[in-house]
Length: 381
Ligand code: SF4
Ligand code: SF4
Image: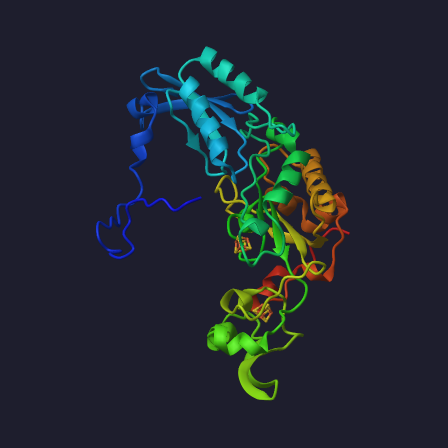
C-alpha cells in the first residue's frame, strides 16, 4: 500500500508531540448501571456457568455474561465483539484478567438472548467464537504468552498448545463441577511471563541443550560481562578464541554447569539455544495466588519434560487432562490442587496420578534446595 501520513513530520519529530498522557480514566467506559452503583454492591450470584448477577444496595441488578477469548485476535473479531456490545449492552464491554470477555446487561430477558446469541456464533472451521463459561469451580481461560507468534526466546509455542489444552478441557470451561477453580497457565520459556509459577497447572517451555556460541559475533553484538552475569550457575566466562586465525574476545560455557535456561541468549544474540528436538514443555502443579484458607503457593515441577508435538501436543494435553481428572476425583470441596497435594502428601500425588517421579524433580539449586528435601520420617509407603 502506498504511504499515507498521519500528519507526523519526520523532519521535525518533536513538533506537535503529545506524551505522558497515560491511559483513559477507568470510569470513562463504565456502563451506566456500573457507574451509578459503583462501590455499593450488596451480593452476587452465579446463575449458571458463565453468567453472574450482581445486586446493588439500590436494588439495581447487572447480569454479566462471560465468554472465552483467544487473547490473540484480529480487529475483525474485536469489531464483532463491539457489534454484540452495541446490540445488547449499549456499546459497553470489558475484558477480564484472564482475557475472557464480559458483556453486561440490566435484565434477565436480554441476558438470555445475549447468551444464546453468543453460544450460536462459530468460525468457519467450527470452533465457538464466544463460548459462554469460565465462572466458579471450573477451568477458565489459560493465561499465556507469545510463543512462536512473536518472541525470540521461546522453547515452545503458546497459542497452539493453549488451543489444544482448552479443546481438551472445554467441558470444564462450560461447567462448575470441580472441587475448586483450576487455573492453567502457559509460558513459552522459563522467563515465565504471566502466571505459570503460581497456577494450579503451569506449563513452561524448556531447553535441554546448552547454547551454541557464535564466536565471530559475540564481542561485536554482546556486552560480554552482561552475558557472564546472566548465568544463574556461573557457567559462562569470558575468554579469547581463535577465529579464522584472528584472536577474538568471546565466551566459554562450561557445559556441565549449564541447565539451558537461555538467560545468556536473552542478553547476547550470539548465544542461540533453541532446538527442535531438544526443546519441550515441563508441567508444574499446585500454585495459587489467593489467600483463601492457605497462603499463596508456588507451583512445583511434576513432569520434567514432554516433547513439543505440534500442532496438537497430544502427550501434553493427555497429561494435563489426567492430572485434572485425578484431582477432581480425589480433592475435597474448596481444595485447590496444591492444597490437595499438600494434604495427601506429594508421594501420594505421584501414586494417584501415576506420574513418573524422576531425579529431575529433586531441587538442586543452591542452599534453598535443602529445604525441599524431607527432614522427617513422616511419609507414606
Ligand atoms: S515466556 Fe519467554 S518466550 Fe514466552 S513471551 Fe515470555 S520471554 Fe518470550
Ligand atoms: S543457558 Fe543458562 S545456565 Fe546455560 S550458560 Fe546460558 S545462562 Fe548459563
